[in-house]
Length: 237
Image (cartoon, rainbow, N blue to C red):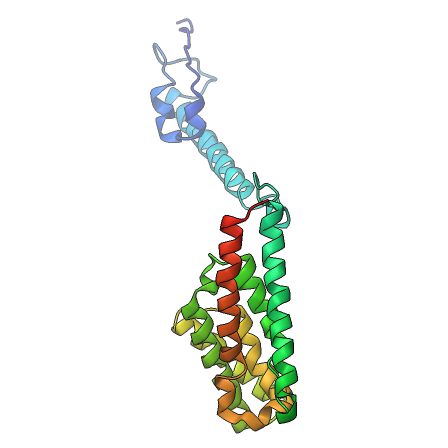
């Protein structure tokens, strides 16, 4: 008996689903040559080879998704962002100058009492209120709740642990937890506990520090913010 013609059909999906291989390899009649293996054995061996290749292919594809290129977008300006108009730069800067000038004048009046209104966190407060007035941190609720609460936790930590790293760490941790719990995150207020623990001149205020100079100074800064926002909206150049 002669060999019958063997017809094969190639399908690339076989590498993805080896179970389909048997339906694509057919013969018109079995081969009866004595030195050849049976068609069933050849098909079983072929399925094992295709299954092994498909498993290797899946592993390679999965491992290629692990390593992704480093993105440097966060180190660049926002895409499509344009330089702000000169008025949007001038008025916030002028507002910061006016705020520090007024606080400085108040310091001169309060100097005989040994207290000061100008503290470092007010620089960060000015940046938040004047440069990003629409941000959540610039909301009046966030400003005053965070200023009062964080300052109070600084006094409490100092009263329990005294000066040193433990009071600073505890006061800052409690202040951050307080802002998150009350939904009043205002980053400049987080520095108030550290300022009180390390500021010997402020220790005499005790729990009055919760209202002065932080909350009291923010009243002035919020008033100046309203003026700055009005000037930015109505006097553009």
